[in-house]
Amino acid sequence: MKASRNSGYIAQVLLIVALIAAIVVMGIGIMALLTKPNDPEPTPQTYSVTLENYHYFNFDDLEYGFILARVEISSNKPFSIDLQRMTTNEQLTLDSIDNYKNPLIDAGYLLNCPGTDETTDRTVNLCLFIPIINTSASEAVLKVQLDRTYNASFNLLDSEHFGTKEMVGIDEVTTTFSAQVLKYRVVSTRSFTVEDAEGGSVEAPFSSQSQVFGFEIKLTALNTSTTIEAATLTIEGAGTYQLVNPDYTNDEELNLLGLTAAPQQTAYLFFEITDPDLDLNDLAASSMTLFLRAAGESDFVAVSSAP
Image (cartoon, rainbow, N blue to C red):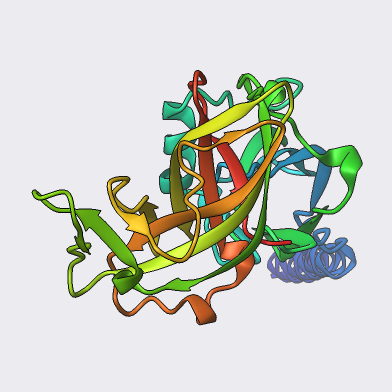
């Protein structure tokens, strides 16, 4: 009986010791959980957008200007970017500008930037083509949408950033004359006559939809003499218009076409406008550009209507 009581006593002691050990182990585990350091906050992804250099190209024989800009975008983490995230202050998205870019490429323009395009998983260096619709603007802004909107600004009046045709692979046009628009006005179609079969003069047969814009031009020969043999008129947003039939004679003004400037001549060029709703009085002078070609030359020279 005594041995049995001793065995029971020992079992109780061992049970108590086991419970105490379990409690201690559990306590240590709980303390370890309570004292375990929190996971560090994830590092947010940040970006930088750097305008490295740019040139602004604005030529009289183009209806719009353009910028070639080298831009670097970098981040502290790997990233990718496409042109859809880049827009201009004129609401042009850079992945949808082929109607501005392709005509220049087709005309032989080399739309490259100095340097090379480089891409890593954290840095993208790009040559961007940015059209400028309003060539009278003083500034353009490129907006890059990443974690927020990053703006790159371009000063369009800074001559240090003006581009030349030579930079984009186009030979500069040389010519034998200079021309200045003195004034312009609507000319009555009834003031034009044409020779009839009998050698007399009759009113020129214009379409009922036609009107005539006349531009008084001072033509100056840079050498001995020059003669204008062809011309067109481009109106921004409306189209390109041709000269009035050269067989038509104006009873009010001298026609510059075919006249020799030696060294100067002042006369009119007449353009037939086939859009009856086009109002000359509503047009800004800067929206109209004449393109003149002298006899013996192959290139047209742009002449602005603006003073």
